[in-house]
Length: 293
Image (cartoon, helix red, strand yellow):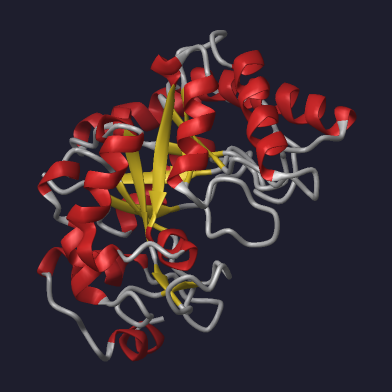
């Protein structure tokens, strides 16, 4: 069964229930959320009652909660050589994993980080060191996201991610989240996606892929810019994305849309999910979204 959903909101009043209701409104059968704002580390307490109510509704809707994903905020940076910022990142990610455990979430996506001038090898070493300080306290798996290579980002090359994983002691709790926009912008030709998966399998192991962010890209192959586009309206294209979404090797892996709001105000996810299920590109999609909102 196709597991398709999108990023949804999460606020302190409705929490998981609000996230779930938003996902269901898009006709999604999975979803991803931040446990607070992605731009900061302020967090509210998790309500057990709201979580239990949400879980009951998921059961009624046959939504597999084990495939729901949390995303860590962008601003924590395990790759940094700054000792104070490094310890802050470690402690915050530890607290996020505990929040995931409270929510019953199995997977959290993490941007590996940026070395900020200290060099790629130092960044890799720092990330692995941080992960070894974090993993083991909960049963939550950290999924390192493939990055576009913007600035001093670590993780735009599979070899870099492989090095990190090789240095991690608790390999049962480390995995990968592919991002199609990031892969394109990093220089991977995902038109030949099976060839990419063969390379991934040889370096890391295809069993480590636990989530795929499905995004088109505004940028040419290898641009290192990281600008998402709506499905079928970018440089990757609808056919390539459909082939990735329906690839048999990843059939049990949740696919999560992080495409931009139309005109920065209209959520596209209900319409994009419908288009993906129909496997037919709707050239008038963006106009349709504008008309119906």
